[in-house]
Length: 196
Image 1 (tube, rainbow, N blue to C red):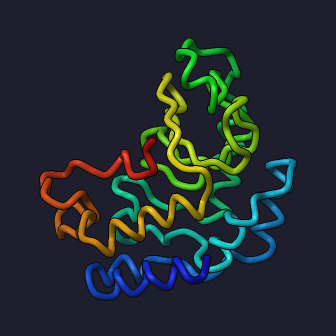
Image 2 (image 1 turned 135 degrees about the horizontal axis):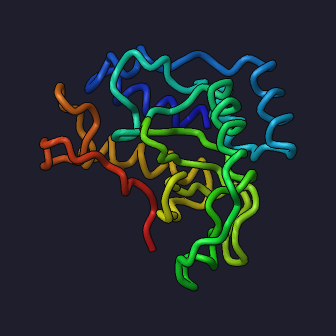
């Protein structure tokens, strides 16, 4: 994961130094152990490796992933605790979605790693649907039925993000932060991720 973060850092140094400065140092071992304890399971190696490079953002600059801030793991643990109190009632999302993502309101196996402040999260899914993969990245709305598969794991998600930064599909706009090239109107990259 250090290789990917190195590429992201180089691109941010040129395009958005304030975002580079907003990246936190590696996760403290105590926060890593706290999330393992809260999650009640082991964490994917890719996730641990990423946060051992940067433990999320300080939150003093715009968000790193469109309108989503990369959480420090200590904050992810607190958010996970709050969200676990949500009901696990089923949603009717259609068969194709249920193949990868459980059709429920919230799962205690979804670890929020980034959020937009209005109840929508990128999560590491530790217990996916029958066609999903443990460790996959999903995007969910904690108050509504939106469930979206994003990538097979943290590495694939960051590889896609890095490629978009490097080839100019994602650019820094002083008003909106990182956004899709050509929009420049505040439309954030909510759909960043691998698509089939």
